[in-house]
Length: 239
Image (tube, rainbow, N blue to C red; front, side):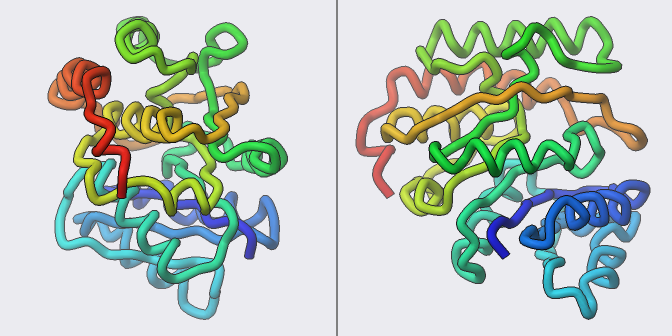
């Protein structure tokens, strides 16, 4: 197994079986780690059943809903401690990210340390979002570039691939942000550490079923985070 796809879940009963199958069908060298926040709809139990007898499926159960950022941090730590995979992915469970794009990420990561899937690299490649949500996302990315200098068209997206060595050098215990903020902070840390970052275009399609986890709290967190990053002390970059 060369790569592991980390997929946080909370109440994804309608998607979990399909997303696991779709990821594993991309390549025999892929594994998947479901990080479930004790979903009331039984998402974690379904994932556990699918994992029985299949060593490419892994499940990490958490006691309660604790947020996207901490779910990814938990998944990264698990992957580094329990596998020897070369590449570790972030991906949503709701098919807003196309699993077939994983192969493009794996090709690009060969010469890079972090590959970011961008919704804005080749124009706007977002499907089925309401105009208000699209304006918010575009504005957040422009705002982030202006304040932090981070050279990405899409710093808030959640479809990306890290080289193992890059994650090993990240100060994971110091990252407390969530949602948009988590994506921005991870990208910023990689950039400031001098890692090679490459964006590739993706088509983002709004979730098929279920409810978005976006909230005003997540948006406000991102607004203030970029200023903290701009004036961040170099000591925060250290593990």
